[in-house]
Amino acid sequence: MSDWKPIIGLEIHAELLTQSKMFSNCPVVDSVTAAPNTAVDPVSLGLPGTLPVINMQAVEYAMMVGLALNCEIPPVNQFARKSYFYPDLPKGYQISQYDRPLCVNGWVDIELNNGETRHIRIRRAHLEEDTGKLTHINDDSLVDYNRAGVPLLEIVTEPDIHSAEEAEAYARKLRSILQYLGVNSGDMSKGVLRLEANVSVMHKDDTGFRTRTEVKNLNSIRSLYRSIDYEIERQIKAWENGEGVRQATMGWDENRQRTVVQRYKESADEYRYFPEPDLPILEISWEWVESVRGGLPELPDVKRDRFMQELGLSHYDAHTITVEQAVAHYYEDVLAAGAQAKTTANLLLGSLFALCNRDSIEREDIPTRVTAANLAKLAKLVDAGTINKNTAATLIVEMWDSGGDPDQIVKEKGLAQVSDTDAISGAIDEALAGAGDMLDRYAAGEDKLFGPIMGMVMGALKGRGNPQVVRELLTQKLQALRNQ
Ligand code: ADP
Ligand code: MG
Image 1 (cartoon, helix red, strand yellow):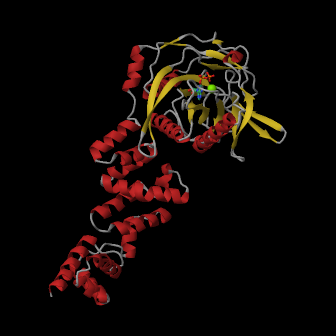
Image 2 (cartoon, protein in one colour; image 1 turned 135 degrees about the vertical axis):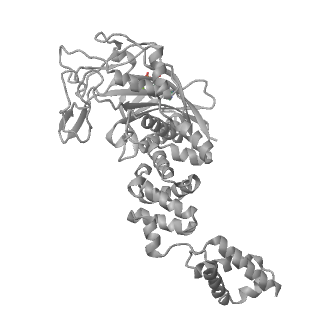
């Protein structure tokens, strides 16, 4: 065991999928496809004389997230000005929340690959506005204010995370909850979710935390994982060689696969936080909180438990299917088309997930390769005994590659399972005729030769024999041999 324990706290910035911006009715547009500076108004440009108005839909979405994360929603909320200068922040300050955030004291349970769970406390989640976006081209910098003023929820954990793997599981779980709630698309390639990792390491003899660094603007779960791993190792070395760790804001250099210092950390004082004078205190009634709580959709943990109870899936299977909403919906669509739960789970987890890995396809994109209707047909072919499991495993690869309909492929290629006893009997005779001394050895008591002989029979049936019928008939014939 190492003498060092990683201490990690994550901050996740999630854009909220509202129609309009946080403090005006300026529309929110797709940040990748929309032409730059086409969704701007005097408020999001920070022009003098404009006044913000709170977007209540954003408040409600943020409350949904808070409640899904088991947070308390304090009755009194307040916005605050966080002052700093940057070209993507035209007002010279960002409206955020400081000492009176919308959500506090929550928690979420995460699941690791080995099936263990961890309890991660949520310190707070507060509302703020996003900034514009800078693009640097050679010596020029271009700014797009479409994103300026888009509602942003910042979700902050306690330092309860102790490895890159746990950080990844937390990020995936949070993205999943946001998607289930319908308040964020989870599409990290569009920057709608941005991650920030606070990392320090603790020696086994320490009684308190050491200095942390903060890796900002991580835009993929992979870079979150790598940057945390890198920082842990770098900090342990720095402490051990006597250099020590200085508090810093860092970035992740994707090309060099290392963290780089951007600046040595500013303190809260430097932001000169003060209550936003242009906005009233936001009071949140108990009734409002309860009505939002009552309207929450089924969340991943509840769906997982329901799949275990109603469908008899194992904890692992149920978790793996529900952790991504798109996969859960796909699975439900297949069942709705009449397929059996366990057969479908086996095809999905056994074959389709492996094909995703083979071709580097996201699991949410499975329906673009094998539609729910086609997977349901395949599962029904298996359950009806029309094809055996081996054929199903090859057929699904063909469906994946060609997008084909399994009923049709089975017909065209004659893949239907052979259960007809005459045909199987004939194949057995054919195989036994070519089995040479294996038969004598089997008759003399070598039981372990049953498998190879069975393999020969299946070969004679081109792999399409109904294994149960083959086994039964073969057992009878071989038994008769021994009794001769
Ligand atoms: P600030 O307000 O300066 O951003 P906070 O104390 O609010 O700092 O913490 C921000 C994040 O850093 C939280 O997620 C918290 O859990 C995490 N954090 C705090 N101290 C440490 C530490 N020593 N090591 C790792 N993470 C930490
Ligand atoms: Mg921070």
